Image 1 (cartoon, rainbow, N blue to C red):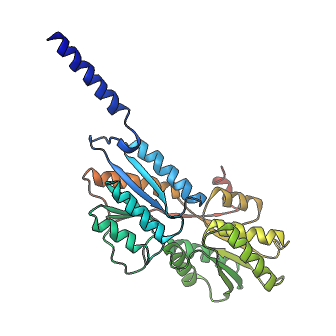
Image 2 (cartoon, one colour):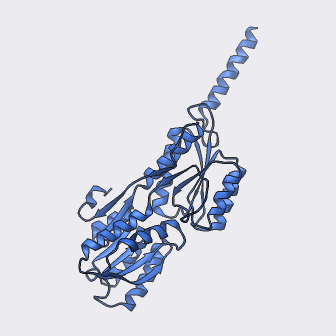
Image 3 (tube, one colour):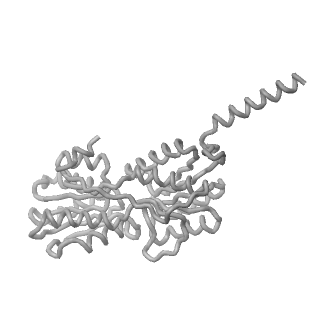
Length: 317
């Protein structure tokens, strides 16, 4: 009997050791359940989104859940494939950052049809889309465009000419930021050129170089970009052309460390900061709460903050 008791005790200790060491695919939550959460991000090469994912992974560790993070690499076919892979893994929930307001609905509906809870992070579907997700965690991108316009309205009260660097047409973050800008900008501020740079610093720089060839000194007063990477690319082209003093403002969105540094250096004039890390953290907490049986809201919206040379020191690292 004593030998049997000893064997049982040793087995119990071994099982306890396995449970205490669980991580990654077998992370245990506080209520004893083990939750695996799949994540599809639209572009991990984007510094702001990489920062968001880092915050999600840190929060997942604190919450005791497992994350499977995938990257659609700005491709809707890849986005659908990533969702299929996560469903094959039998994840307990999916956090999706939609790439395209229309096309990404296919991936979303695939999750819903599989009976897996779906949560939307940071970007949204097209207006009027009927997608039955559990909750949206992110920002109202329309406000970012409005804040850019309000900044330029104050900076250029007598009007001026603007070059607009759009992200990806059809993507909610592009369309909403652009519509917010268009509906708020003063009538005396005109968009004289617009290009799509797909959120890329390099593409924005190439497009801006071409634009500077078309418009001479005094013909461009400001550049507005849908994200900071494009704003930085445009600012680089302006600096290389020796026209920094000629163009009054370069304005982005996101509030990345690189944009903050560009504002400090005088290459950019402003950015509209979104709390990407906060969105990532909140998404993991909301999903975990839902899986534990708690009620969650339909929408969690975090605020934007305008960063200019006057307050940039508050955001410098």
